[in-house]
Image 1 (cartoon, rainbow, N blue to C red):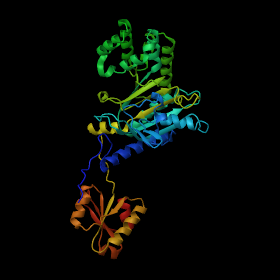
Image 2: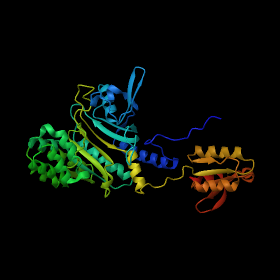
Image 3: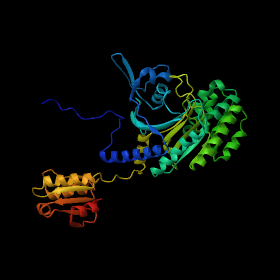
Image 4: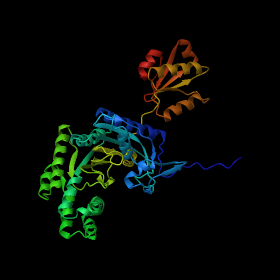
Length: 430
């Protein structure tokens, strides 16, 4: 006999037990229902893209976190998010799409990073984006933010979205005379929550930012609260781009409230490290559990498909790391147990397996989740199996029941048992 291979899986790759998978799929179905209600269209792009497409933003350099493969003359990568595949899809179909193009996508992405808490090499993500042709109303920014509120509502979670604008940061950095250092300053300020203002000040000074400018940038990043914060911000800087960003935030808040949005705050410390964001940016947190980190993020980008098309295609999008969210909810004890996948376990007694299979087929045709316990086990053992699986009803079909054209139904929660006609039994288990 050949040596048995020890079964194991790659570290950081997604695999749930069937019981948890049921809960996870229910979560995805609820999220999809929100996207559909907002009239977003489904899209499923390939899990692999040509390397020249996926690496366009990095100039073709191989990022150490990207899984890259060469097969014959094909050089391809596993997608690491949905943004570049969306850009490629829109550019390929720009002459046939109806703009604004609203799409959502839910699926697996891959990053070859070190597995750790909250970070996997394979993970589920869901994105919703709106892409415009030439122009795109700020109402779409508000709708993407409102999606969070609606999604967390159907998931029965209390969460809120923190909103800012990259334009305001660019404006204040420009006003202070450090425009050429914008990316470096943005990366530092984005770490305010983790490092604190003292450490941020030290890091800014290491960039040769003068103390007065450091203090102003820290004060900017600490601005947080309701809409009144926007008026306070205007006292901090008068630079044109800054003022434009503040006014856009005011407009987004107006649109959001018109949609019934309530669970948001203004936080100028929301920076978002990606340079492709050009306007509104936002992050979503579980209320009272901000220490767990953001469970969703997004923002506006002016040039979605600039690498693949000369057409101006501005967009705005939101994203939720569903695997990360599921892990957090599980660790916090916020995942409820799934209901039994089976509603009725049919147990044949004597020589009634064929009749039990027929009964099962009839029940399934009526929409009842039924299965036959056909294995050669004792009746007692089968009843224990039904109890362990939390199956609410057992249908017992013996030879006497078959002769009388009836079935015995046992309620596993109350232990009540009665022999009924098929129609009467169906009413109960439904």
